[in-house]
Amino acid sequence: MAARNRFFLIRHGETEFNRLGIFRGRYEVDLNDRGRRQAGEIGAVLESEGIDFIFTSPLSRAVETAEIVSRSIGVEYRIDEAFNNISLGEWQGVEKKKIQHDFPEEWKLWTTNPENLLIPGGETVEQVRQRSFARLVEITGEGGTTFAVVTHRSVIKTLAASILGVSPPYFWKFYIDNAAYSVFGYDDAGFTLLSWNNNNHLSENVTEVF
View 1 (cartoon, rainbow, N blue to C red):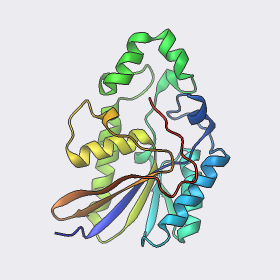
View 2 (view 1 turned 135 degrees about the horizontal axis):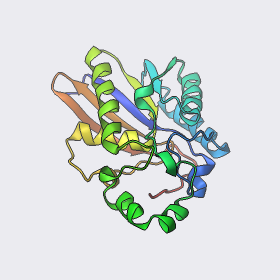
View 3 (view 1 turned 30 degrees about the vertical axis):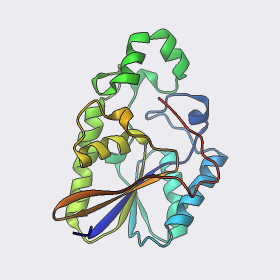
């Protein structure tokens, strides 16, 4: 059965924190020049996809990406807290090298099984999965639309795991570039992965790990 409806999960464009290896979480950091250019490239490639509306995380890097994309394709965007990034508590705004040095056990858990990690003042991967997937199910349950969600890699990874039924540890089994998008179908039979980490539209692409 062909998928009746589609949705696009878009990771926001690049920020300087991505380039410098700094944990973001809910920390507010804007797109850099490359990130803005990437957002324009997403908008250009999605112009003909028939997207009806866009949801976005409330963080500025996602909102700016959504604004640029929405102008390109001529639809409105809506801020939705359910698609906010994971809260990383005390790690937010801190260099990854410093965390690795100061908290080696926690760092090892982050790089091997982050589903079991709770950072002081933060939230768990499972909490991200529950809130974002519940909202996705609600939206798709309305049916009959093609939409996009501009969000963060933690949200995209957890949504993909829920959609595909992947059990923990799954977080590092999925890779998604800044300003890449993945496409899913949905109908009465459930969800279908149509394509993952589309990045051919990007004039520049920088791989990011951990």
